[in-house]
Length: 62
Image 1 (cartoon, rainbow, N blue to C red):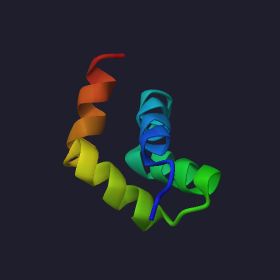
Image 2: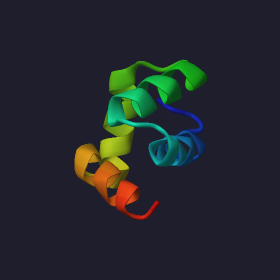
Image 3: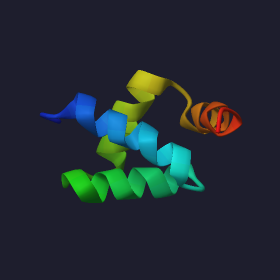
Image 4: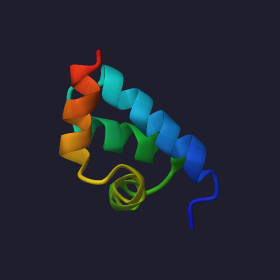
């Protein structure tokens, strides 16, 4: 179970603003929090839905 899930997801979202891809943001978030990429992907998808679509929306608001 991800203890600091809210902060982790906020950090993932912030990384989408500065990272080129969802995969880079997932990898950096996973590394920072000590979770697998799949754990972060699952938590992020539960909050944001389709991650590629969400990243596109974030990129459009840069």
